[in-house]
Length: 367
Image 1: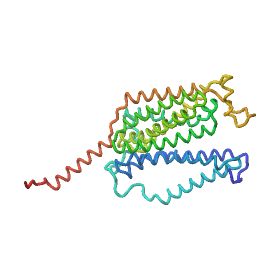
Image 2 (image 1 turned 180 degrees about the vertical axis):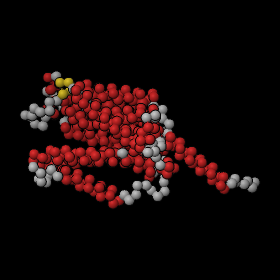
Image 3 (image 1 turned 90 degrees about the vertical axis):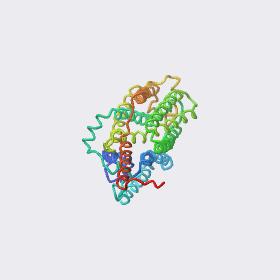
Image 4 (image 1 turned 180 degrees about the horizontal axis):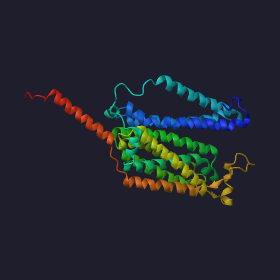
């Protein structure tokens, strides 16, 4: 609406904030849906990959927007064009969701857990408070999401003081998401086939943290584009791989708590920790030495610019890595999940078999 010139210039900023507020209000309805969708519409052999596809739609959209933006916007006057393209894409999605989705649940539940239903919201919250493994996952997932948010937000500021261009930082951001989508798909397929939620999640978190540590170290030096890109890609592959698996595991360890409740609180943890860690990281940045400042020309849009003074992000990176290492160690040692949903489904299957045997009678042996 700010591009239509129907508001006075003095009110454009409040209108912008209103739009951001409305978008933020709608975000939970999208972010909390994947686990519910997977639970109600897919059998247990497809839930993880269904969750992955639904969850990765959001970062995929971000990736496409980041790739399109430089092509569509070459001058400030082109920004409205980009906004209308994004609005059009959102409009298409709204139309498809409004007229294409005609039922909240399928006629025939794909699993016994889908047929049983879930706990009411407040009763579910009370049950969550008693599940130790969930709260460990709550903190670890939140820290991982916060680490991802911080790195994607500060990536350009981390790299440019070492002489890396904005284009390279943008490429790293795209590589992070692209590799992450691939990793999430691989992890989802493995979990659907093996049901090894714990092993896949722990392996993903450990590999992602190691990749972040490597990135923190090599990003302090110049002319290491390939190693930096590789470390970013590895971080995305394993970090995103643990993302949908963690959400499915949250549902498993808290069943019969509603899927949107258990997975939604994981996002709340991520948002809160993101805010805390990003503020703390900005308080820990250090000034560059005179020698380092001579290599920081990539941070300026033109030679006469004096804004956005480049700074050393080594200490904030070490802080973020330290936080994540702490939580991952706790996760490795103390996280011992019980998959209540899978267990309930297996018990229901056995009961169905026994009921069928009782109703039909024993099979006679004619030998």
